[in-house]
Length: 120
Length: 313
Image (cartoon, rainbow over all chains, first blue to last red; front, side, top):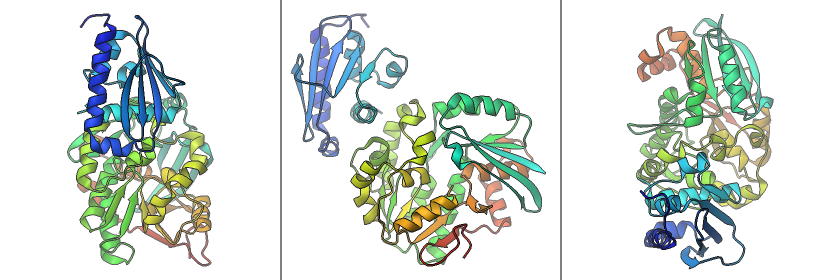
């Protein structure tokens, strides 16, 4: 595992995350009521992406896109590993390597979603 | 006199102390809430260690059992390991046995749980025994774990789906601070009116609302229409609230001591104190034997009409 991931590597992980989500019909149905914008940004390289959840569909945009409901911040390697499903968010969130800003209930819900995509 | 203390992460406003006899043995049973303060709970547990006969941990689960799998809640484990000498239990050892018995009793001996009854269990991952028993007696189930813990409007409708989601989610969720998943401290004193309105259809669709009372209470709608509440740890104030909101019956799975029902952790601690054997040697059969010796039956309180709020008709 390298210490710094590139923007393209993060993009690839996020695409995989979005595909994993959109393949899961049950998860899409569960989130039909939850329209949120999530900004994902790296702390060690210039890299920003926006995940937009609308009516259950998740899309990925490069850069920022309006005001975010949740902001996910971490080192580039962590973001890459997190969104590719190599690691789960709980430990890095608890030890402070992963910061998620937003309403507590939104943070919990995002955690549930990521676990339902990748968790085993 | 045997002394049992329950240290709870719940509100100190629910503190209670009774003296009673259980199977001829005098007991002093006390509940101390720490208002969600984990550090205070640890300090209190260390202070009690070696000075009482058994300790219960309330307002938090340490172990979640889903079939043969046992998940350890990290915050709960921290409390458990603060105690070195006195037997300490969280109620999970007894819960499966007791609540299964209660469900089968209600189905066999009352008209409160006929086959096909629509039941909302506000959370089932912490009460898998009750969930399975309700399924076994033919209830039409909704498990609200995703709804009430994460705000995800997805009703889990079978034990199989519950099992699958539990195995997927619990290994990680048990690591989170417990207060993120469950109302502790002051949150136990407040009804979340906004969410109560949002979740109202789930309550109204059901004829029986089962599970953890703090969750039931936190999202209790303004008006029920005769539903049965199947739970424990209710105070006289809770009974008054349920009556005012229109619940039909309150069924509690633990005995009434001094006008209120304590949590399963308290009853398990009482049993452990009675058994006088090392905790690791205690089995579900020991608990079942004690329940039968106590001739234990669930406490069924009709809430319509003029009935004393302590639970005495």
